[in-house]
Amino acid sequence: MPAKKPSRPWRLLYTTNGSVTDTKHRSRPEADRAAAVEIARIADGSSRVVRIRIEKWDTEAGSWQDAATAYPTT
Image (cartoon, rainbow, N blue to C red; front, side, top):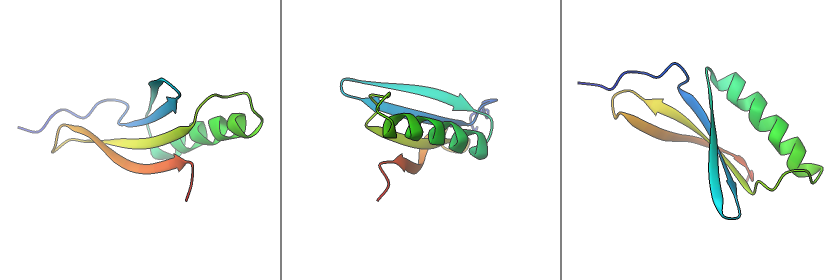
C-alpha cells in the first residue's frame, strides 16, 4: 500500500559545514521561492549554506526523491 502523501510534499535540504536542516513546503513554486531567498543570503554573505537540494515526496516509494539541486547550480 502506498504511503500517504504529506501535506507539504516538497522540502529543501540546506547543507552547511557540519549539518543538514530542512524546510517543508506545499508546492514547488513555494520551495523555489524559499531557495531563491536563501541563495540571495548566500550571495550577500549572511548564510553558511553550501548546498540546497529540492526533494519531492514520492507516494509510491514512500520516501523523498531528489528533484533538483538549487545551489550550487551547474
